Amino acid sequence: MNLLFSNDRRGEYPQSWYAATATPLDPFPPLGGATKADVCIIGAGFTGLSAALHLAEMGADVVLLDAHRVGFGASGRNGGQLGSGQRQDQITLEKMVGKEAARRLWDLGEDAKALVRQLVQTHQIDCYLKDGIAWAGSRRSEVDELHGYAEHLQKRYGYTKIKPLDSEAFHALCPSPDYKGGTLDMGAAHLHPLRLTLGLAKAAQTAGVRIHERSHVHDIKHGQKVTVRTDAGHVEADHVILAANGYLGSLERRVASRVMPINNYVVATEPLGDAAKKVLTQDVAVADSRFVVNYFRLSHDKRLIFGGGETYGYRFPKGISALVRKPMTTIFPHLRDVKIDYAWGGTLAITIKRMPFLTRVRPNILSASGYSGHGVGNAIQAGKLLAEATRGPSEGFAAFNDIPHTPFPGGGMFRTPILSLAMSWYAMRDRLGV
Image (cartoon, rainbow, N blue to C red):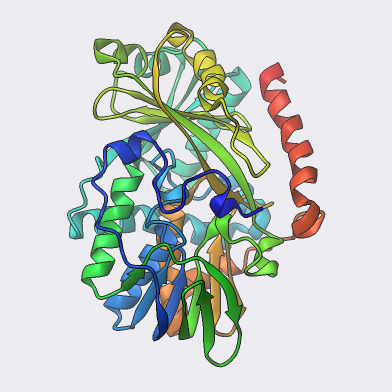
């Protein structure tokens, strides 16, 4: 079973609030016949579009292929949170890779946020970019950890845009009875991810990138020149970039063994009007400390966009609304009867280390994936780093490439059932409050 075609109509965006509030670009033609390029990129999400745009600006001839539409995958479906740092916190990274490398990864995280803001400004992308992400703790111990981490960022990294919030201050921001306090990071941001993706695609097209939608890659022939084959044509290129993330499938087994697709779900309620103040009193996003993270924000039309719940098989569940309503009403019991207007699923990808996997698979094939829920900044930055690495040394690419990544137990065949058992256990601990 191929995740590309397991849950969605071919060549169509999901019926999400994002798709309903974005103006799609005119369809790009499928690849037909033979063509040549300096670089062929597989996957037109954040990573692929960023790589294509940056390469074109460097003067490269680029062909970008996607099996569906630009922004079809996680890039156009996610929670829209542009977080600080990396998916793993700096304390964990200091233990994982050492203090010097952890500092470099923090700086790269700050660069990633700046890159997104710069692209939005340069290309005038209307994606409702707003400052602020709050991190919430449901238990006193979680709040203490969040406060300690804010202090760590302030003292070791000189990061002053984050501040601790006690219970009273947090409830003034987010009046949920579940949360006991947290932090507010005004250096982070939130946005409309599909609008951002479409804006990047338009910028890439303007820069000269040849984009082909409905062009499913099913074979890569390696060599001094790489041949990428679709159903109706092929591209011969000097370099290939793999930017398919959770939809990579079996195109590259070394990557597949270290990057596992999982499914996450989001709903958008009916407009809340004045009642939106019972959810958030400021236009910020929120994420909490659960193993299976709940994340939410208000849309520009005052809907609650709430993400929660994961599954580890290929198929999305039939009742996405019911699945997400459970954590949503844990956080906001007063919304138990609110109408849900949109509910959708998406496939992202994780690694064991919960850090991106950037690698040079072969001398002329590079890959980036496994953003583990931190992809808005990571993926767009990864695209730029991949572009640099096709042209010569890239310090940023090397920094991520140096992170040790081990394969999932069971390899590509058995990783899903094994990890599903483990993650289900941690999710159960969340529900039990352990």
